[in-house]
Length: 390
Image 1 (cartoon, rainbow, N blue to C red):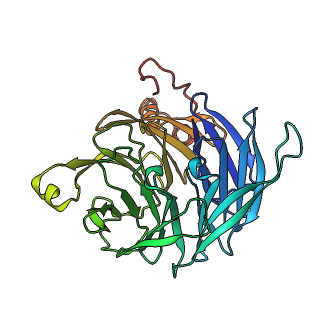
Image 2: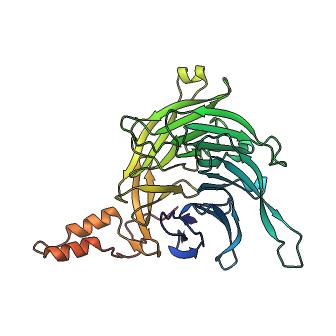
Image 3: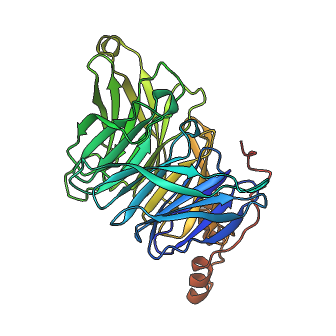
């Protein structure tokens, strides 16, 4: 499984492989900060976007090397996010930008020049969504079962849900819903659950820094009765700026798991509660509990993402590391590994504390500073005391 790392300062992308912890550095050739990296459904294609206003698409070859196949200027300002649609709808991307627009792109493949050769490829802008009056901060395609839907959020505090009535004509999109929030929004995610008993659900986060703003994560659900999106919960326990938010894939759990990137890493359990009130209203009542909270980065956390089973959460932050946390029970999560950009392991926060506690008393202060400030490779993670990865 591949994990992406969001780099705040360098125009390069690092790709990690879970099972071997191999690192591959790709010179993305962006001329400014890279804001987002996204894989397609199969993990064989990768898209990047940057403040240089460009989007680049990379393909993985037979040698598992990433090669640049397309590059184009997508917006007239910084491109914040890029995301892939389900392959059932073709090779389709969506982007959003500081220029107050979101765009939908489709790849067109030309005639094959000969046996064993690939036709020329280029990306065409199918539509430009211009409803926002401020920066569009995130964009996500909805679950495949709901058709071709697209959600955006903006700094003006509005969630917009678009739908393509004809998936064969991506130049036509209709604005289905506008959901007003009280705070500027920075990120959103759809609940990808496969259970048809669960109505469509979206989580959004705000990076508002003003004092007294309250909770910064909001949960919305689509009500079939009112044909509107209704706010179910405001998660008041998260009051710091939220930079990323992701639902875990749900392969049969009776509850949802939400990963949040804020000043630390938060993992929340959202359990539907069945009672008379929820049955009458048709809205889900949620029992929200914090399953885990990790300050291992010791700084701002920018991105979180899940493995395919929703049992391992990876995060990246200003410490320049990708850190992974594994589920050992409904409310038991443990840090399992931390990786630097070169693929080398560094101690997890718990291992670093254990190392510092084992420093003999009387050690000169300069030596202590050197030992605690340096990243030390303690060994591979395949230790008997740890469970196998799943």
